[in-house]
Amino acid sequence: MTQHQEPERTPDGHFVVIRGRRWRATDPAVPEDAAARLRSHLMAARSAVGVAKRRGDEAAERSARARVHRAKVALGERGTPPWWEQNEAERRRRWEDGLRGLDS
Image (cartoon, rainbow, N blue to C red; front, side, top):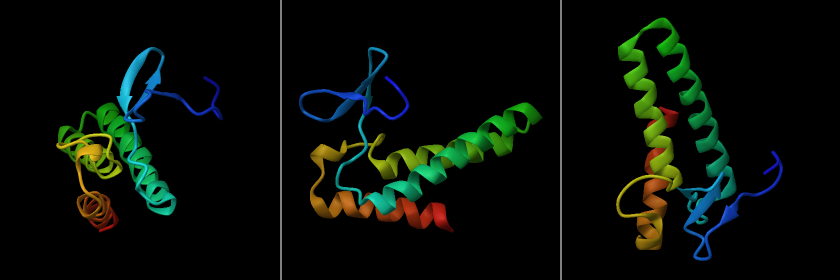
């Protein structure tokens, strides 16, 4: 897969396949502007995990990992129930709550 190519998806659209491994796909109901903000939070949090690990700062690492998790849940890539088992209102609430928590 090149950087600009969309990853392979399972026939039901619930998962992407990257290097033979299945990962939960982002919820397609998340509007692109919200998804872009969530991805930005996710990348910043992943970077913060690395910085904290290099510094040996366990508290900062836990905090950054919690932000990674919150962004992934908001995107629908983690959490229970999965996005395809949620109704429209639950899906909207999930990503809106995630943005509220990450934007604050």
